[in-house]
Image (cartoon, rainbow, N blue to C red; front, side, top):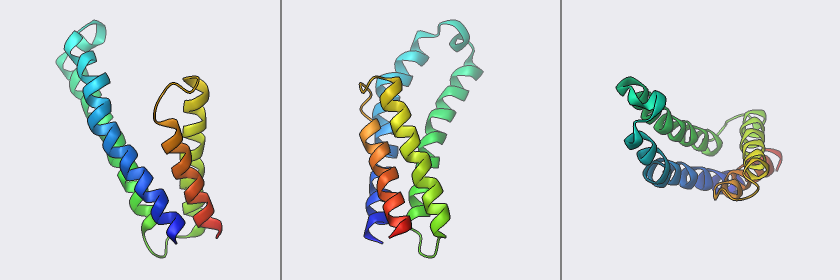
Length: 116
């Protein structure tokens, strides 16, 4: 069970950093540029919404892995998705994106917890 709690803690940390730091350093400058499709106010609202909705989904997966009685297969599926996302992120950004260790770590811990 400790593995699942550790996984959830990494997921929460990733969600908070994504929502706060990522928004401030990536999304806000993009939205302020108002170039191309972002010239449309609706497009800017959708981008802002989608960015934070991703963080909410991260929090929901953290809640799912920490919730008592969740089937091991669901925890394994969530862990596999986080691990795959982290590894893809590492390869795709050539290790330069700061999130891949947390994403991968959360996935590994959830997989260990699911099978422990």
